[in-house]
Image 1 (cartoon, rainbow, N blue to C red):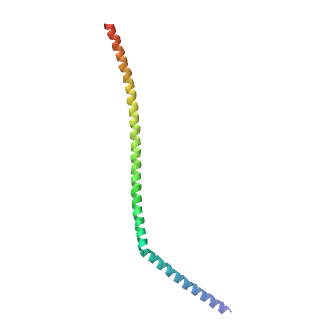
Image 2: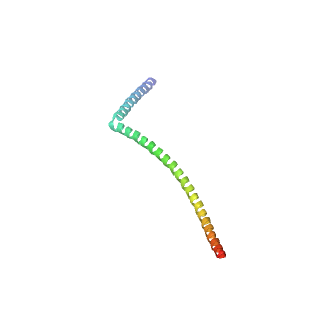
Length: 111
C-alpha cells in the first residue's frame, strides 16, 4: 500500500512539474510576442515621447513660476513707487499753493 501511495505522489509531483514547465513556456512565449508586437513597441515609444514632453512642460512651468514671482515683486515695487510719487505730488501741490498765496500776499503788500 505504501508503495502505491509513494508511486501516486511521485506521478502527481512529476505531472505538476511538467504542467508548471508547460505554462511557464507559454507565459514566456506570450511575453515575447507582446514585446515584439508593433503595438507594444509603438506604445513604448509613445510613452517615452510623453515622458519627454512631460519633462519639458514641467520645466516650462517652473520657469513660468519664477517669472511670475519676479513680476509680482516688480509690480509690488512699482505700486510702492507710484504711491511715493503721488505723495510727493500732493506735497508739491500744497507747496505750490502756498507759494502762490505768498506771492499774492507780497504783491498786495508791495503795491
